[in-house]
Length: 399
Picture 1 (cartoon, one colour):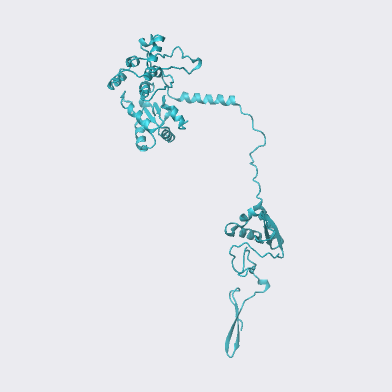
Picture 2 (cartoon, rainbow, N blue to C red):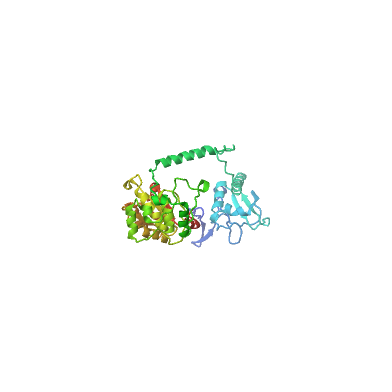
């Protein structure tokens, strides 16, 4: 008797009666042509003997095939550099190509027609499937060019009206400055003895005090007539109208102004820009600190209404910034407070001090940029700016 299996792929066992017993003979089932399953679309299937398998089982990802030509197949060359794109990772791409086209694809890596630049590809199957497979491979080897941007015009760009742009920029700058708080710069009342100082006497004083040189960098090379440049010889000549400043100076037991102080105080108290050059330890810090304190306290906007510091002092290093802070804290003028912010210090403590309200911020460029970008320090109320050791900051790259 014949036993039909439930699974057509399993073997059929025919039984014959011999001496009352059954003898089982195992044969492979071959379905009729109408029931032949389609050959699976896999690439690189090989039997143990190196020949192509009959579609039974899954390939191991090899792309090599026997070199014998197949019926209903096409062969063509592709650039060797694109073979990996066609195969894909673990053969995923080539399987997609086979599934999409209905053709079988082999990469003939060991073919004698191959060379360093090209590799042969074979596709087999119906003509339509082969055509589609080749189109898909061509799309990989020669991807279509990206279409031009629809908004891109071949017409040349119009010329820019720089005069109009610059005028608009100047207008916006004026609007921004107009929105800021008003500022007063000149607080200097020249002592009569200094005002009456002859030019020869002023020159002799400068020569005796480290050979002070005064150079005006504005137009004409000479300062305007309304800018007083005579040096002061005593603290009283500089701060006679500010007795509290004099008291702080007396507390620190200074005898007389240093050369840089004698020449810088009259100019800074007038609100003029100044570049001061002097040796270390000659009193440069006090030369700008005392005018800064007078400037801060004398602005028309009350200090309690300002939302940020009035004086900003930039220093290139943490050590210099801390040194300036120690010097500033020696002088208690009308409750003016300062904070030193620098990288490497406690950021949280520095922010807490800033939020309590300060008039002077002493900072290194990096930490200042951090706090300004995070809107912790508002620079809109800064009206007195000091760049201590500016040349060194430029050398360090803080443009």
